[in-house]
Image (cartoon, rainbow over all chains, first blue to last red; front, side, top):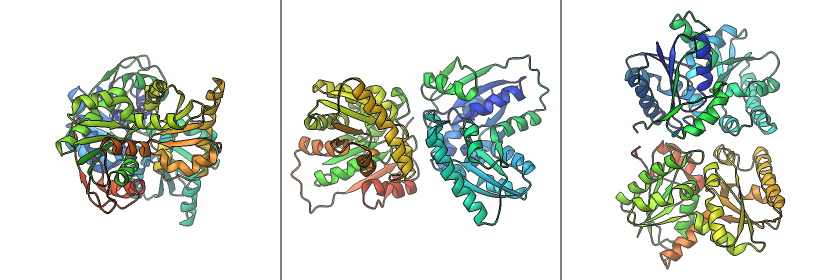
Length: 265
Length: 265
């Protein structure tokens, strides 16, 4: 089984990292559309066009199952992606929403993500189906702060505090108290220790990367064999050196071989 | 005379704003490659490919003179751009460096810009030709902070202070004292009041947008007629609504009509 994993950049490597543990019997293709990232500030039409060209590349190169590791593409382009390829596709929104719904006692959940993900209300709609009230907040500065390497920096803590205070204020203003925060962007898991310091002690964190890997393992009913080392091929649309350097931090292990590709506009 | 102005996004509108004042006798075409922005974190090869497709569009639509308003494209792709089109091309690096050289008494200049602009050392090389020593500093968080609208926010002031302290430390470490700071990115003029507060009182600011407009006016020996209102056509590769909304802040006046275009990959 060959699983194709797609993200606009490096963040999806946190999903791949979880998949390698959950489904070690598969082999993997990963496309990072690094030349055209970030998707989070772009329009739905552009995001869909870019995402479709990326997943078509994955299927042409043998992917039999697709994981859309990018929250923004999952939130805005799932229908177009499913229509464009003949294989099953799993996004990160549904697994993240399901995990949050299982954990919350107050039936109130907070979600943070990119501007585009939040504007789509994809998490809110998915949680509503499960009887959960959700308040979403766009946090556009968190991705650049992670990419600057400031994952444990006082400035990042201050920015997180501003965003999360506004979010909490909006929740309590509507008479609700969230007990779960969904990390609706694959860059955010790198901020977990910092967010833990800023959030109240009783707030649960849901990492969509972990939830998605678990759900993919269930869908594919993988037995798992930890002794095996899956084969992974990496493709990027911008500098392969940068992909190797930055990507290793997200994947949690060295990345050796990355191929530079050009995707149709 | 039809002048084509190119930027990866909205920042170049600060250059267009100055051009409209300096050369009111011309008409203008502006391309913002908003679908593929930001360029500042990308590789030289990708930046050149994107910039060339943008300027070819401008020339095909009648531009007889080109202003590359994007510091990153000016720094990394000037040769490829000049080779790709049959018209004169002016970038922002040379005018910015010349203006800095004219002002500095200490013959030491500091430059801030995107990661790609600084990695190219384009300003440093240009200033060296003029006998000026330059220290450059990449400030990747300033663009997202401006785009978040935090142009006068305590967090932005703190980030600017961190970057500028590191820069000053590097200057004095080499035994030099800069008396000019070049704003090597078209987003930075929106931070002028904030930077004034952070910088020592005797530090001069050079805005490459202004310098470039003045130089273009000299090259084209424009007489100017303030009574005329130049015709401007706007093109963007992503959401035209967002271009209208965000762009008006950079241009300093309302933007009515923007056409959505697709550029070759």
